[in-house]
Figure 1: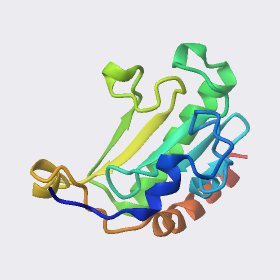
Figure 2 (figure 1 turned 180 degrees about the horizontal axis):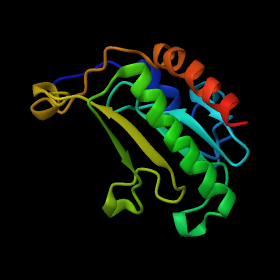
Figure 3 (figure 1 turned 90 degrees about the vertical axis):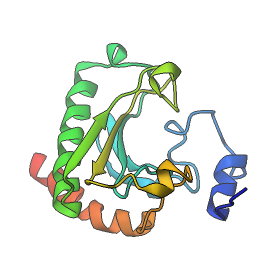
Length: 165
């Protein structure tokens, strides 16, 4: 069996940092998670995915714990879409991807990892970004750590937020 050493996951997996409500999005200000946030709005926020599919993988999330789009308010809908648009702009500017997957998975059969708190994924994509490590080894290789990703994306989100104010 192949092993990929990832000690940074320990506190997250074990819940060692305490104060867990059971929802990673509701617990975003818990120690060890808030540094993933790129920008905060009035009713939603944007954060990096702790376990990205590709460099730059981020999510747009309402603060309110709601299971689907049908439960969103008009304000949440507007801000979710504005931040999703900003995600496209920021990822395009920072990474120059050849494509971007934007997705909402409602329910476990649809691929939702967090089933009861709706969120939108934005994943930059490039031709050939799924290589033998993913296909054969079931392992992703990401050349950029999350701190570097945040440093690259956060100024763009801050500029976009200022221009939308």
